[in-house]
Amino acid sequence: MSAEQTLNSKITNAVASAVASPVTAAKPEDVKPISASVIASIVPQILHATNNEPWWQSRVTWGAILSLLASILAIFGVAFPSELQGQVLTAIMAAVPLIGGLVTLYGRWAAKTPIGK
Image (cartoon, rainbow, N blue to C red; front, side, top):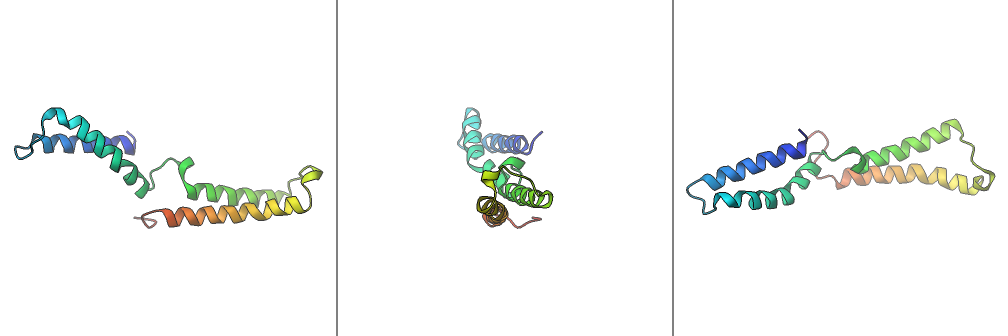
């Protein structure tokens, strides 16, 4: 069961328990719409805060991939067609690690929780 499915199940169970309480004015048929509303508003935030998004949606992962790609290209001296040589190739090789580093930093700064928490 995925993290999202687990959260959805726990939220639905908690709402059902709250609705079953005699102090709650909600009816059993209200469980589904209340759960759906809570799930829609809070599950994406929880998944983001705990870094449980799929790897392809991670800004940090894409920043690291761009940085690694630039390093690999530089190490192996990848040969490009002549029209990409010179200044254009230099600009590309300089931009990729810069963009990768910036995406990595942005990904870390935009995250809402510190690493390891």
